[in-house]
Amino acid sequence: DAGITQSPRHKVTETGTPVTLRCHQTENHRYMYWYRQDPGHGLRLIHYSYGVKDTDKGEVSDGYSVSRSKTEDFLLTLESATSSQTSVYFCAISEGVGVPDEQYFGPGTRLTVT
Amino acid sequence: DQQVKQNSPSLSVQEGRISILNCDYTNSMFDYFLWYKKYPAEGPTFLISISSIKDKNEDGRFTVFLNKSAKHLSLHIVPSQPGDSAVYFCAASITGNQFYFGTGTSLTVIP
Image 1 (tube, rainbow over the protein chains, first blue to last red):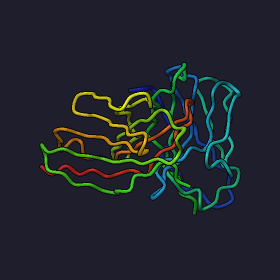
Image 2: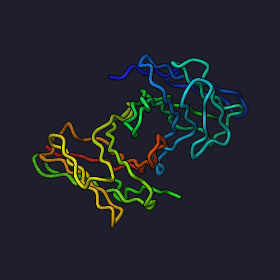
Image 3: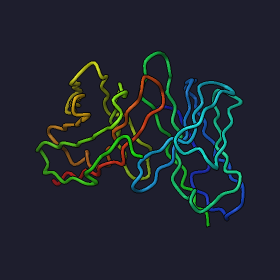
Image 4: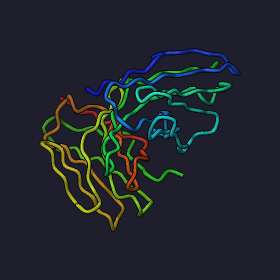
């Protein structure tokens, strides 16, 4: 299994509070991604990174920001959490060398915003 | 707008029979397709992929078929086993590393 960890694994927070989710990899892969999974929507890309300090928006980036200061860490921040951001969040990594390649996913973080 | 669609939310199959999971896409620029398998409380795991220059790719019990003219791909599992019971997602990409996922099909293999 690819070395990907996410923290925390579960979090309950109140509307309006800031939240940061962490993804850590030990594979030295170039690309890192944040997805959210919701019923009826499958997995949707929030943001992704193609290198240290290099990030770009995905399909559903509004209300989220990311940072990548080291190859191994990719942080997802909800500046002011809303109930619509209640979801399961998955981090993924890929080597990103040449052709598209498969992504390896972390175990997920279940976030509940009350 | 969902660019990758899995119109069957669930599928039940007897052990030993064939499971066929379907996926449709709308963007003709997609040129790389993958299938992922997901168990409850775990992240998705990669299963099999296919490039748009091919129409079939096989890996053991798993075969993916691509019909570009119909913008349709399917995953065949033969023979189906109880351990195959999971949610299956198809995903598509345009020569890059952004993937668009379908909504998933929950497969139940009945012993």
